[in-house]
Image (cartoon, rainbow over all chains, first blue to last red; front, top):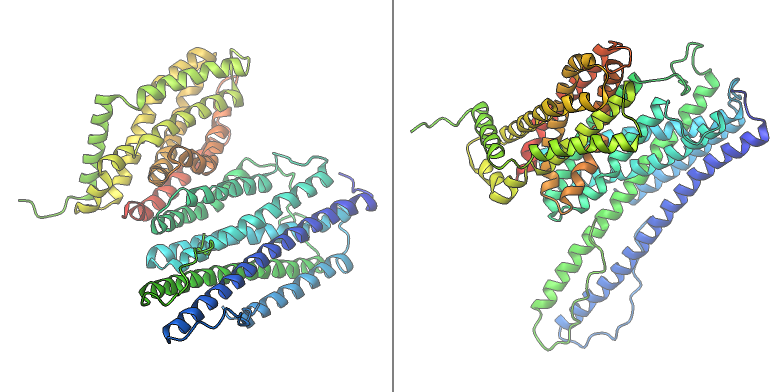
Length: 74
Length: 249
Length: 230
């Protein structure tokens, strides 16, 4: 089969590489969403732990301030 | 896996893929017969080899899971297969694009390698309904492992069978009579292959880390809920928060 | 009292005999397979708008029919074990769980051979000009039956113990059986050729089928115990 002229061939090659990049980016997006959910859960758990700690030592629970939670290292 | 290792993996992957693509477009010469279209080969073939290798790796992890009963191996098996299925989608799509550009049709049947790959892909797609159809966690893992081993053994058998019904349409770039790839194409191919293989490893590592972290969070949450239950009444401890889908799949 | 645990062969024979006796008494699977196969032939006659078949088309119709009839039997083969505690019995007995695998595979093989004993003459009657291709087809069919039996016995317990029982079995089996179908069709299309049987690549396809059977037999032997664990 004779080779396609460069401009036409270029489109197909570009399409193939674009598909690859798009799949990769979609995957990264999904991972980012998972990471976000994990971060939120860590915050919730940190809050829960602090409440228990405060209650356990018999003091009034410190009024719901958010502690800065260190994000998990990428 | 440590965060620094993940970071290094990701960086190395990006580097290799970048270098590979650069070699493909700026260094490797155009192929005589197919022209510029042949550049897809540097993407399509590494993806295919890595995907198939990934399926076999999934089978190996499955064997270790059955022998040890440790769910860690099951997680590795699942993630390996999952990543390979995704790579498989990329293989089929890039293969179709290459087919369209080379032979004018989006799909050709008389073409053993791509057909074999399709069959393998279809088989591994059934991995998900199998897992989801079994509720008991341990049994699900065991059955999945048996499946992964069966399917892993199936891969070479399938390629052999389809090839025996073969045609010579698919460019057999490595076994051709005219000597295969010239040196500069080989270099580009190898770098791309290394990059894609490392990409697979990186994605699998990230996925496994995320899974493990979710699992640990579930344990933490459960432990906190339990100790909250045991707390003396009347201290106003917040009730349990329903776990927000943190369980591993 | 005999204190030695029964040999695997003895267990296989016992379970197989039990299954065959039950089948003979209840006639659950085989008559349905026969009826199913005959009806599918009729449907193919109209679906393809053909009254005579040869070559690849004949092989395709025959093999696909056998395949789907086999799926019927495979779906049912472990249901009794699940519902009446057969899995537990094998686990508790001082017997190798693998014996159950061999017994079920053997039962499936018997059902398929019986199916073909009836379905092949019907197929000949309906579609073929000459039956001369059928005799050399028999070894091919036998190896294909073994492939169906072995993969069926391996995948069926997974399906039976899952939620989507009737769906999961065929779903997994169909791609898994493709190499066996390729081989059987590869031989069959030449054996059923219009001008009389041709033995092109006959040996190759038999070898592929044999290899397929061997590999899945080994996998079943190695992995079946894990499928019947609690």
